[in-house]
Image (tube, rainbow over all chains, first blue to last red; front, side):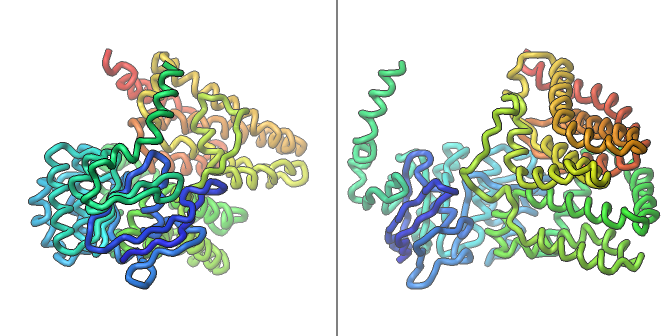
Amino acid sequence: MLAIENLSVSYGDHKVIDGLTISLPLKSVHGLVGMNGAGKTTLLNTMAGFIRQDSGSIMMTGRPLKRADLSFLETENFFYSHITGREYLGLFKSPTGVQGIDAWNRMFSLPLDQLIDSYSSGMKRKLALAGVLRQEKKIVILDEPFNGLDLESSRLLSMIIARLKERGTTVIITSHILGSLTGICDHIHLLRNGKIQFSRDKGNFMNLEKDIFSDVDPAYMTLVEEIM
Amino acid sequence: MVFRLIRLRLLQVYRGSGDVGLFRVLFLAVVILPLVTLFLVQRISVHPWPYIIPGSILYVTWLVHSRRRDYHFLAAIFFRPRVLFLWEYLLFTLPVTALLLSEALYIHAIVFTAAIIIIAFSVPSRNLVNSRTVKLRIIPAGMFEWQSGIRKNLVVLVLFYVPGLFGFYHLWLSGFSLLFLTLVFVSFYSEYEPRNMLIAGGSGSLQFLLGKVARHTSLFAMILLPLIITALVHEEFRWLSAGYFLASLNLMAFSILLKYYQYRPEAYSGAHQMLTTLACIISIILPAALFFVLFNLFLIVGATRNLKTYFDAGN
């Protein structure tokens, strides 16, 4: 179990995560949804150890979660200029070694011997994804992984996530597109005002959209009518 | 991992030099590099250069470090990115350390290395997130480089500005402030805006360029004015103070023109950072500052031509 308890994170005076508590079963796929600024990326960054929490704990099977336990696909990925895709992937430690790069690339079909600077944004996203997956960690965190991917690649990513789950990997994934999560997740959690408002298991995704937007829709409708 | 990354960094420099162009690389390697090396070797033991040279290199290292974007990336794949940074900085500043040691400036070398360690082990400011800000109503809305740059460097700017106000007491204080303020302000232009911001004004490329240089340089002049007034108290150095003041303004123009000479939408230029810093250091020798006045004329033509591509796109 991945147990997050009473977690609080602030940027200056602005509290983004406010006493968040949640238990995430391992070896399953968790979707995290929420409005812009709800704290999804902050939560993931805190789990990855990039942001220090004000208080609270993140434990994996009774011990603090370490950065070495997970691989993390950030919303915006960093690439050194003037290096090739192969050199980039070579930076990631992988059980399959440098030799495994071509095998992984059979899924992504990237021109690995070209400079990354010449890649499209979708290709860059796939390259970052390949780097994250190549590490074969027990926990994989994917922040908005569908951004910038074409339909085919999105479908491929869904298949990869399903396969990761079969192999016993815990996947935590965020997306603005609810439909992309309902097909692949075992649990979906709504983050609002720095807290988990509710969680739904796979069997209860039917009314998810209605539940999420029930208290938001009337407020938006009033605003739209007022302004336009 | 350390060697793999440093090998990649060297590969980046080698491949990046291809973008600069063969002639310019040869010019840098055959003319500029030997001249700079000669200058450093000659001056390193002459007061105050044992302070200025390592100080400038430390400043550049800090600038590069505070703006680096690979901290999270390296932290995710290596877990100890700061150790990597340290090796990288030690390697690239090795010539300066060697120079200090060769002149038996051991204390300087130790302090220099200690400062490199401190820089490498601090978290790059680009990766620190906070929602605090400062109100900058005095800066016109269009000067986004200044708004962003001042917010990022407020503490450093205050630290560099205050000593200069005491320039009437000792001229070195004015010189220190002027050099480091210029270094900070010219560094604001290393990040390039998106194309829609560039063309928002609706003017032509030359008009845009000259307008921007005039606005930014005149505001910079206003900021430097109190420092210069205090420096002018020293009658025997009046012309020198005025010369350095004009050199600083020229460097501001150089930084803006260089930015648009190499402009690509939404890019960050390490080369801009290095070249502007180098220009600041070279301009310490006042006659050499004249070279950048002439170079600015060349840059106006190049930058206008480069901007034309973006201003005219879609027409």
